[in-house]
Image 1 (cartoon, rainbow, N blue to C red):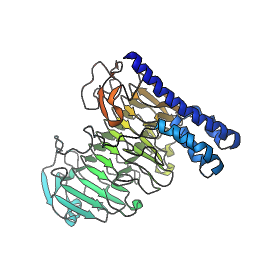
Image 2 (cartoon, rainbow, N blue to C red):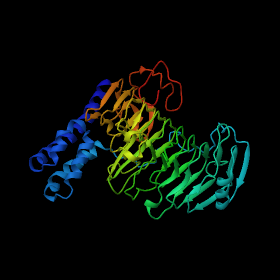
Image 3 (cartoon, helix red, strand yellow):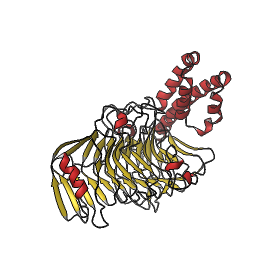
Image 4 (cartoon, rainbow, N blue to C red):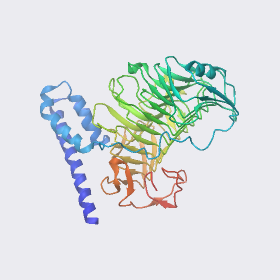
Length: 472
């Protein structure tokens, strides 16, 4: 058995090496005849093979004499390194919206306001007082203008907009922002919301959480066909801290035909958010720079926790144009005017935690740290991604107890402490990694439990020693 595993690991390594050598050979030719490639070669040690091949393919565009001999070997290498996800639907692994309402009720909702029309919903959002739950009757509700809130909720007496049962209430939004959350202590639960704009530029957000919209709870919803399903940012010097995004399904039915940011959770500047047990999938940006992120926190905030989520960048077409990154602290950076403090000179995010996440089928890295400090990446499982990137000083990250398929890389002098991380062999570690069938076949060596990560992906308590990755 050991010999077979070693032989198969050698075969996988050989395939990756062949792809890398093809890319290097192409890069060598480019270096000799085309000066812009020199930058890529100089930084090759900081890029994963996937990233480097994609960079070269991009730089070859518009140079037909070079494209003819070099694109075919680069594409062949790319196909070896980026496996196409299975053709069958991938399981949600218990994440995202659940068919039954979550068991723990929201405390402090003492009064019920029933509504059964779009206008009734609009009016209820404006007049509901603390302790009120607006309960929407089953049905389909179309909207073409932003929904606004009239009053603050209070600690111990929030205001809620919810369906009594998930899968019974559908909203369609044909507006740039669906619900503007600019007041504290609101709850949104059990709703199905779809963007139906003919132009993707016109369906930006299902929820736009701004300024005073602190302590929002967005739970057990299904949000589809938006550029940034949940957008969070400051306004007038105030920041919507302490939000919770729990058990939501964030997805798109097609690539987003827009040059605007495509990031299902686009959080800028807010602190102490909890992002847990969500299913985030199919985020492809078809225009502009083509770069899309599943979840990111940036903009000068701190203390964000991203735990137990399932992020599948592309359930099919992994090598289609564009770049997909799973989870990031720092994203692509923030316009200084949008930062919480000092134009983000000190950091994009600090003291953040990403733990027990499963990230799969991304043509770029599964975990990314950009200009962020004190970031802990622990007990995550990466499947068919380019790995982990820590970039742009003063980035500092700890990579602990992860099960990784891909490259661990630092760029531009960033700091990465890596301990007790083991490689994922997709054919032999679990039943079928690409299909998210993750029962152990060859259980990896145990690693010590981390105090900051007492539970696993399914909220099971971890033992004193347990397997690396999201599953104990």
